[in-house]
Image (cartoon, rainbow, N blue to C red):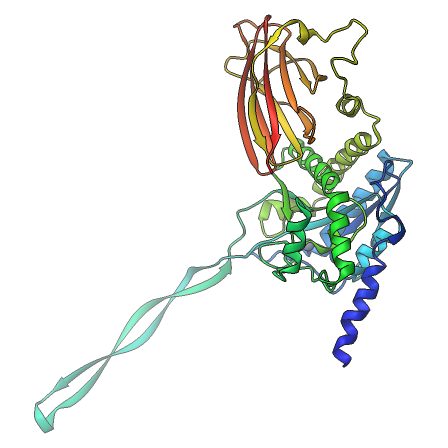
Length: 451
Ligand SMILES: [Zn+2]
């Protein structure tokens, strides 16, 4: 049957998406190649600005412009890294082709640039009035003489104009392919509940032709889940933080189990950045402006630099995190300062993300409280003065580790004790924790990964 030919062809193509010989290798230790995908292209226009007075810009053009700037910025900041754009012109590529390019170049990271959209509401406004003739019906006479009388009269009625209202939503969001538990992810794929959409309006739908029910499909999905989710999540969190640092609304890291096909078909950590809403007037102007495009390119590059440093273990923060300095190993007679004080029983906070962001603020009056923070006995914040602006850190919650955060007071400020407000960003959830320490007592928090 000719109909069967198509799936077989795609299956063949899909098998080549993954480099099968290193399927079971560890994730890359060094970031040597970064693939930047300008979403859509050619006949696949993506979303377009459609509200009244929009620039009528096309997502495929915006993604290309931002991607080119991102490629330049990555090359500038990371001279040793090969940066591969999936496209540099307005050409059509199927998601399969995009993924294939990334895999053929053996990318260590896959960054997809998109613009968001959503359903537009239609509205109307009165622009004129017009005179229309209506008829009043009445009757005269009785019985057989009864007659119908039509009396014309004129009436003014409004003339409306219909238009599409712009979206009120705005901001940048980051998407990763979710695979918390392999079985869940496989179930989502195999239930056939595939709703291949990224965006609310369905404009950005990416269709999958690959059969995840096949034995090969199951293997690929399982491997992706194990190998790349944590790293994709980490990078996505950093991109979100860097976007937040620009002052733009950062809508957080979102996970989907279905629909972001191109992300799971790539044999590397992968994220998709919805740079802004093309149907929101401010966002549309921002993502079409040189300044906006450059700001996004710089923010994403900063996140990639941090991610790279962390993966390669070249930044101090990551070294501290991964060095797992235990109290016993610290045998040189240089006990951390916190050891000399007593520590309160930790508050336990259940978190669902392996990577969480913690913002420290002074709680209450800003009285020059200086804190140090230890995580799993390693110093992660060194003598920071707390203010109304957050001091942010990223923590990796690892199973099998105590995941204990300890607040050490370097002073008690003008108003004792030393009080810190911690805002913990855990995926889409936020937790608020208040800690207080003084010159005799440390405070602590323990994170537990929710199952
Ligand atoms: Zn898109």
